[in-house]
Amino acid sequence: MLSFGIVDDDAASIRMLQSIIEKSWLGEVVMTAENGSEGEKAVLGSNPDVLLIDLLMPDQDGIETIRHLKEQGYGGKYVMISQIEHKEMIGRAYQAGIEFYIRKPINRIEVEAVLTKVKEHWNIGRYLNEIKNVMTKLGGVNDRLGNAHRRATVKEIVQPILRDMGIVGESGSGDMIKIMEHLVLHNREDSLPPLKQLYEAAARSHRDPCKEAKAVEQRIRRAVMNAASNLASLGAADFGNPKFEHYAPIYFDFHDIRLKMKEIDGQPQPGGGKANIKKFLQVLYLEVLDKRRGMFD
Image 1 (cartoon, helix red, strand yellow):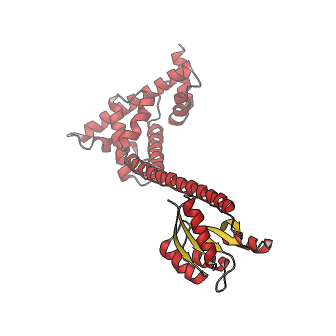
Image 2 (cartoon, rainbow, N blue to C red; image 1 turned 90 degrees about the horizontal axis):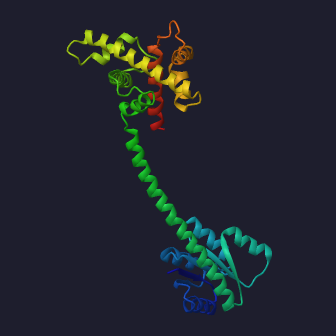
Image 3 (cartoon, rainbow, N blue to C red; image 1 turned 90 degrees about the vertical axis):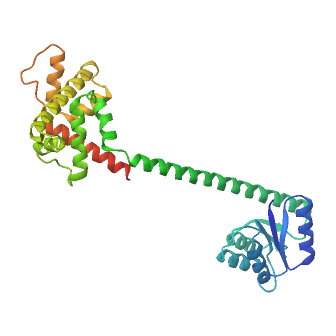
């Protein structure tokens, strides 16, 4: 139920306003006061949703009282009551923060109409606050989901890329993931160290690291060549294929992709079996860094 406060130096006006509010089922009056300074204390003590306040009072007028209440954090709605119809004075009242104005002598129909509007505004404000609170809670859920997303592993980032290029099931893709994990943990720059170091890093846990490093190199080379062939096939079938458009120009020298596309079309090309392994791994590493940075933005 909406709560009202009334501050007016005319006791008869207070009684009339209270009667209209309560008999019209607009809400309940939780405080009354007959001057501004006393009204300040009563308002801050009971915190009504709506304050009806007289413009002219002997010790402290309504505009001054509103200003003091705002300074002390009271956030209710204000309705001014006055027999004065001076435009400048009413303008000052609206500038002070009143939302509606009731003229004296008090008329039941006018009071009911104005306070019904006030109640509608108050209900809308409460509804909007409820929506805001729900959105804030949803934002917290999204933040938690976002935090879960931020914990995505290098493998979870790399695998979709390799899947798009058709090589996620190859043994060389596992070697690439190990290399990316090593780079994320130990490399402090965007550029790559020598390939030999990367192959050795991928082979470190093997019982014969030296021999395994050579096998890593061969597996990665085979996987990269297959990726080039797969992308060339996509491009030959549809030059506008989104996977072809995205991966072919940045992971490979486009000249090499064109040679493979011609091979697919039955035109063997000398030197068409080359692949720039370092460029492939460099671009893959940059994509990993970019996605990880995006997660923490």
